[in-house]
Image (cartoon, rainbow, N blue to C red; front, side):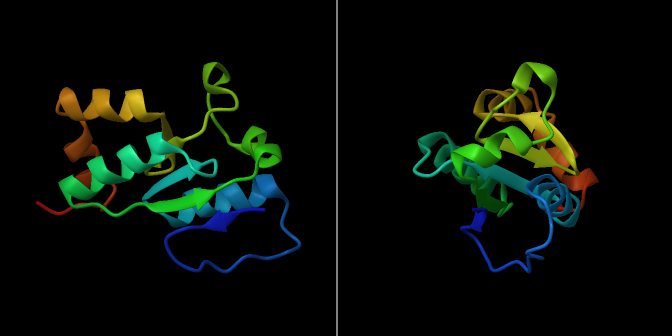
Amino acid sequence: MITNSNSSLSMDLDESTETRIQRLISENPVIIFTRSSCCMCHVMKNLLSTIGVHPTVIQLDDHEIPALPTHDYLTHLAPAAFIGGICIGGLESLVALHVTGHLVPKLVQVGALWI
């Protein structure tokens, strides 16, 4: 069952898992999908928080993870971060964007951060 650990989101119970995930991605400029008790998700949230972004975080059950629209090499990835509707990957990818200076401009571009 998809649960949101940030805020309440309306969910149509008739939606498939794939449709619901796709809707959530399109409705949130920065969203992280995670498994329960994932320490990497906590680090991702802290990094984004330090920059000034508070992402929507959705906890997925293990059987829902395959519904994530990730690249072939990222199949069954969790946590998975999406910025502006595009999967940027997991913690390593998020940190790489930050270290190379590409994260803040990307967050500004999607309206998640104002500088």
